[in-house]
Image (cartoon, rainbow, N blue to C red; front, side, top):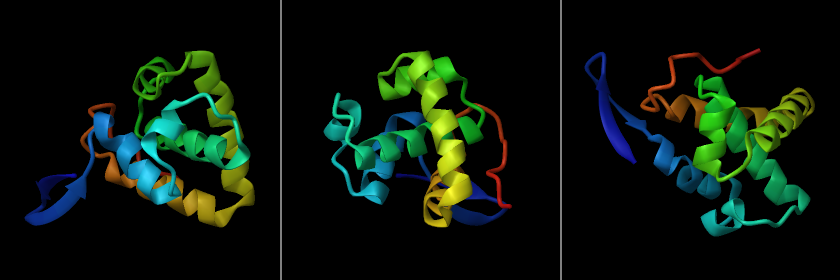
Length: 116
């Protein structure tokens, strides 16, 4: 994890290439499994969370697809599913927002995660 100084304080951040590693730890799934073809519910949940975290930071669907090794239409579907999951599951929403907050060095804008 990279370290960044922000307003005089040390902040832990991740870059796009590290998001899968951080997300895999948060969802307790090996990165190879996240990149793989397995469509088990808990693995898809982790992928969707990663898609949404990147989306919340302003990454385009094509950029997310390149990072996650997926087609952009798969990313669109995953973001839609993640939105529903975030409405229904507070713990999923917390993890996604935490991931999005950690992604401040992505260079895809400075959108803030939804806190409602």
